[in-house]
Length: 140
Image (cartoon, rainbow, N blue to C red; front, side, top):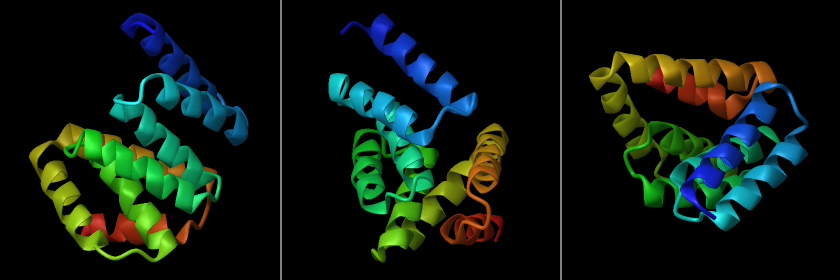
């Protein structure tokens, strides 16, 4: 698969999500993307988010770990990892939250993007306890 095809498949899958396609359908698209381009952190980040929204924390933990391993500086990947860790009872969440807070302080635009992502998550999964907790920690 070439970079152009990867980009167009990614954009198509992302558009499906934004347009309200059923989560299992979008998850299948991102699983295919990560199989075809396993070193693309954005694909793993999106897959983890979708798995979290769909109530699949163990799968999300695996996907989020891959995303952070590939791109340790991606704050959305770290948010997803934090959420998956909270939902599976894993330890070490606070270090990820602290790094995200530093990145947000450095970039107001990034902070706005992350706040929009959190709002999207709470709209799609109202009352999500782990996301409410992460949101509060990031606001501290």
